[in-house]
Length: 437
Image (cartoon, rainbow, N blue to C red; front, side, top):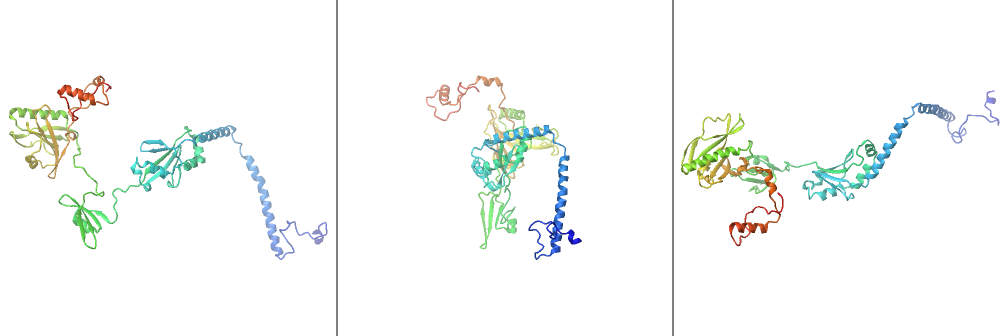
C-alpha cells in the first residue's frame, strides 16, 4: 500500500520534489545526508517567504512623509546646489597676519603657496613648521599633505562633499570664502643640541660635560669652551645666537616725571645761577602711598664748580623711592664729571642740567648700575615739555605744504641770511603754501 501511494502518474517512485542537478539519488553521495540537507534548505526558504510579507506590512505601517516638509527640503537642496555651482569658479583666499589676497593660480600646491609668501612672511620659510587649514563656510579642515595637495583639488573635494552641501542649506551666507590659512606650529626657541650648554661660570661649564660650553667671565666677556681629545679650547665669543641680545638702557616701572615738576627745578637752578653762578642739587622721590613724585631740596653746600648735599632723613625707604638725583652746572655745558662718576654709585637715575641761564637749558640723563653708566634719552623719564597737540587745531588750516621744497628753501634762507649761496646743509624753512596741513 505504501509503495502504491509513492508511485507517480508514470508509475515511477516519487522521492520528493527536488531541483534538477541539486539532488542525485543514484550518485555516490549518502542518500540520508542529501535528504537532510535538502529538507533544511526547504525550511529556510519557507521561513524567508513567511518573513517577506511582514516587512512589506511594516513598511506600509510607516506614516506618510509631510509633503510640505519634503517640498521645503527639496527647495533648500536645490538652492544649495545652485549656490555651490556658483562657488566653483570663485578663487580661494590666502589669509594670514591680517592679509587677505585672492589666489588666482589654484594649480599651486599649498607648499608652493607657502614658498611664494615666505618673502613677505619669513616665519613661513620652514615648511616643516607650517600647517595649513582650509575654512570654507562652516567646513574647516586641515591639509594632511601640503607638498602634494593642490589648492584646486582640495577646494573641489570640499565643494562636492555632502557635508559642504548640507552646510550651505542652513547657512545664511550662500557665497562663503574659501580661506587658506597657514600656521606656524613649531618653534625652537630656547632649545640647544645635546652636545651644547650655557653655564653661569667656567667651573659649571667644566663640570657640565658638554662638547661645547658657553659661559660669562669676570672680565665682562662671554667665552666658548670646546673639549676635545687634544685639550680644552677657550675663546671669546663675538656673537652667538644661543644668548639673547640685550640693549643697555632703562625700562621705567614708574610714570614719567611731570613737565611741571621739571619746570620748578629748572627755575630753582636758574635762580641759583643768578646768585653767583652757583651749582645746585635736587632729589626726586616717588611717594608709594600718594603715588606721585615729590621734589626735595636737601641741605647742601654749593660753589661755582661743585655741590655736595645730604639726603633728607624724612624720606624713609618704606614709603619713598629715591628715584633721581638732578644737579646743575650753572652756565657750563651739561656733562657728567669725574666727581659725578665717583659719587653716583647707587642704582638710580641721574640728570645734569647745563646752560641754565639760556632760554633752553641742556639736559643729560644717565642710569648707574654696578659702577657702570649708560646715558638715556631724557624723554624716557621726563614728560615732554612741548606736547605735539599743544596749540589750537584751527592753526593748521592756515598752513599749506608742498612735497618738493628745494627752491622755496633757498629763497627763504637767502632772504633770512642774505647769502648768495647757502649750499645743501640748511635747516627746514616753513612749508611752501601749496598744500593744506
